[in-house]
Image 1 (cartoon, each protein chain N blue to C red):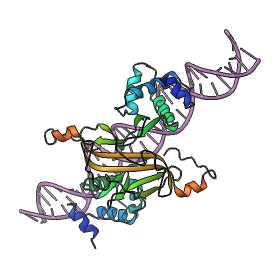
Image 2 (image 1 turned 180 degrees about the vertical axis):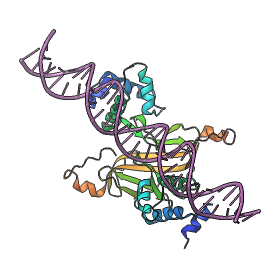
Image 3 (image 1 turned 30 degrees about the vertical axis):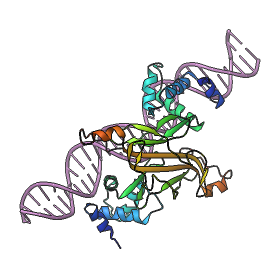
Image 4 (image 1 turned 45 degrees about the horizontal axis):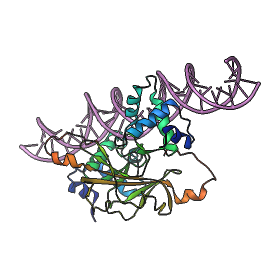
Length: 148
Length: 148
DNA sequence: TTCATATTTGTAATGATTCCTATTATGAAA
DNA sequence: TTTCATAATAGGAATCATTACAAATATGAA
């Protein structure tokens, strides 16, 4: 089993305490697609001196090194995904939850590296709509989340 | 030929002067994917009293009514597309240009309206990388646009 | 131990967007 | 055509995510 420390070393990232904590948090929250704020608030419990800037710096650094993937589905903030296998995402306009979506896509799977003559580095596949659970409750409690 | 005024009326939108101007601008700039600021700056020439808020309000209203599509590919701002036929988008990390991409995608074409049990309202397919033109110049003039 | 360098911190600045309130335009009724 | 209620617009302040910057701290090699 690969340790977090080795994951960082392999990518040429010095494994500092805050970096390890941030990576650990992401690994433990694969379904959360946390915001910077969520990462910050949680790790603050362990590292009371933690700075929000450090979280931003670190996540941007991880992003550069390809350790995490930035999900920009909401349009207002970046959500972070521990970068394992690429997948699409679904944002529910009612509850705000983000779901991982696993569908066949030649571009997402890296089979196609070019499109219209342009070189592809990143693929972002986003769906927005009403999730399975919220569909059941449509009409019952019409919370307004139209901002999504 | 459908007039802009009728396009608005059909969607139940009162065709005010500023709304018509904004819609006209979008129709004349199908390849620009303009930002709010771009729309504002341009129309300001015709309507010197125009407020930035009006542009925001109007575009949000058009968005609600399905008259335009919001492209959130850069992650920092919304770009607007006159809503004709759905297509994917490519963002060049070097020059910042956004290209329309026409590829086969059952979800984008509306053949599939559901995914993993969730109801799809919007499909966003984004590619990021280096465009055809910038690929030629790689290594020559390494402008930093890493923020994309 | 010393020193250069990388990392972290905290605060201020930025930029897109929304909020709020006053003003102006519009369209129906009298 | 006037009057009035309502919708649209304007302008400035407020918000929120993110970045910039400078000072403090940690790290690791000599």
